[in-house]
Image 1: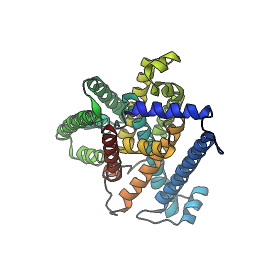
Image 2: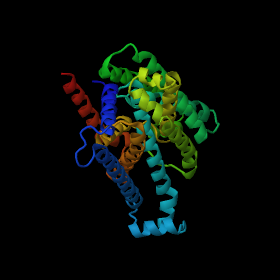
Image 3: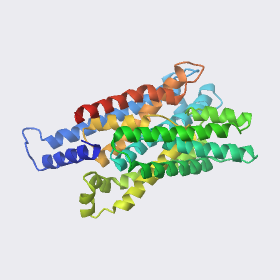
Image 4: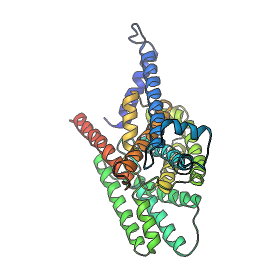
Length: 366
């Protein structure tokens, strides 16, 4: 059974429970709501713990008490305050927002394609964004001009959108999750090869910047970057939440969605646009980050026991933030003072989830 079928079954069974079928003792509806609250509280607790760990741990360990003092009474003249406010806090803010954005982008793509394997990295969307950003950096910066953070977001959005449209055009000619993965991987290889060709024409300084950025990292994030990404992420997050009701109807089938007044074409355009914008924001500031957009939505749906958009959206965003914060902490501290590629760490933890998902789908098909 594909993703749409399972979601429809899940939401239909939820509807039956709402009608009171099989209510004995504690109602199933109350049990399900309690589960949602517990999972959400657990994710928020993990988010707080991940933030504190990222602020405390590093090349300069900072005691928890000093972290609280630096937050309550900022003092950049003190070493702890300077490290906290100029280096770690903007990095933590970026990792949280961009990690949640990437997970949410994966969830939107999975809804659009009706396939749990769809994600920005697997489908080559991140690679397309990387190609356009690299072209802008090589051509514009190489010509002596400067590129702002907003310019990088715009360039990344163009690359993400173009790649997504190519995947949509080709996905109608393939069947099954396996072929969709192969299609995305091949598209990613093409974009990666084009990026490598661009690097050969870049100056030495641009090559270093491109190479560090292309491995995926939140290193060097400034408050200016946070100020640019915050309204973009906030706008996309609010727009995504507003789509929760039509998406819930869409998951039950196009005919059902049309019968309740959902404009299918407009919804699809919104899904593609929002997923491209979220993936673009991540790629522009952190480079391509792998497997977050697939692994996190899958785990969140499992924990929640539902695929209802209004329930899964906030949990997916918080889960993505937790996942990227923990992976970034490992990337910074595992081989200190050398920093490991963020994509390498996310792949170590995210790839097994994707493999387990594929094996589970194969068992269901047998």
